[in-house]
Amino acid sequence: MKEFWNRLDRAARFGLMVGAFAILLLTAGLVWWALHQEDGVLFSGLSAQDASAMVGALDRMKQPYRLEQGGSTILVPAENVHKIRLQLMGQDIPLHGTVGFELFNNSDFSMTEFAQKVNYQRALQGEITRTILSVDDIQAARVHLAMSEQGLFKRKDAQSKASVTLTLKPGHQLGTEQVKGIQRLVAASVADIEPADVTIVDQHGVALTHGRKDLAGETMSADVVEAKRNLEGYLRQKLDAVLDKTFGAGRAIASVDVQLNDKTSKQVIDDVLPADKERGTGVVLRERQSTRPKAGQVDTDEVTQSEYDYQVGRKTEQIERGPGGVERISVAVVVDKPLSEAEAAQFKSVVANTVGLVEDRGDRVALYTMNPLEQASQPQAVPPAAGEVPSDVVPAGTPPTAQRPWSVVAALGAIAGIIMLALLWQSTRRNPSVAAGLSEAEREHLLGKVNAWLAAEREEDKA
Image (cartoon, rainbow, N blue to C red; front, top):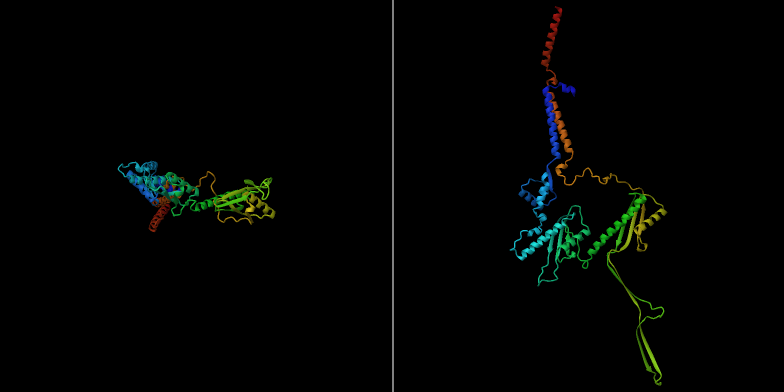
């Protein structure tokens, strides 16, 4: 490299230095542009209706913006993200196609009573929708209220009702308790509505709620299924703790099946209590006694007749059994090591006591032993340690332009290297000291001069 540098003249050296400096400056500028883009995410995951409302507000504010991901993400200058977001939130933009009680901010006193009732219902529906949307698993919601009319000549048995349509986020599902919570929320927000009168469906039209318990047993069935799932999970967790301590983590697999009663039964037992052992009779309920003279006898002879009515004791017992009672528990355990008969019997006893099996009820436990379980052929992903953030996770709120991989920087560096080599090769071609070899005519001319010089030297030596 030093020899190459020495062969360059001053102009070539100056040009090479200027080109290298320009390439470095260009590379630094490209890297800064790639990592410090000024656009930030204002809102993401917007519906078409909400995005239209936001864009209209930004146009009225004359704020620059850029749309990405089909219009569901709005980008604005990063330094103005929080300011613009607060300004938009203060404008009461009707998101999700709903309006709240801000509908009465500029009320018209000439409005009819019917129009006021309609506006109140719209505002109440919008406020309930906004509250439901605060649940993490819900992406969109729509509420309809069927409110009964109150009046002197109106039917008193008219019942208000409500219906809620939920659009869940992809991969999310509402639990039974969450659905009940939404029912109670709507019922508590509207007068004369019971939780059973609130119907909730998802975006596929599947009902998440059921009717009243006295009209249908679907609610009970759902509760039984939920109780079955919870009980099986609780028993499996207890059993897994025992298996991990006994055989090691992952060396045994357990499965628990709980069969619950899903019917309501009522039993009445009516028994007659035995008589008192001391008296041998029951309780005297009524006593009658009559006296009459004997036939054909003197007046002093009389016959006395007594009648007693006894009441024995009775016991009536009424037993009602609701759904959810345990009918049978079945447990299956697979162990990856052989066990002797004594060890297997002892282990079954441990499992039975851990789960709480009752033989008279028909509970049973099955134990299977086999060779060591084969590990999966594909390597398993190792979860990150507590507090460790995976390298491929981008912090929330980071602009998409700041999430560009380092491969962009590497590509820019490679391009800069190629440009530098091209400039070096160009400067080498222009340097006369390292030019290509002489042509044939130039070589003959130079050879003639050398021969003439040698001939002149010989003549001088002879003289």
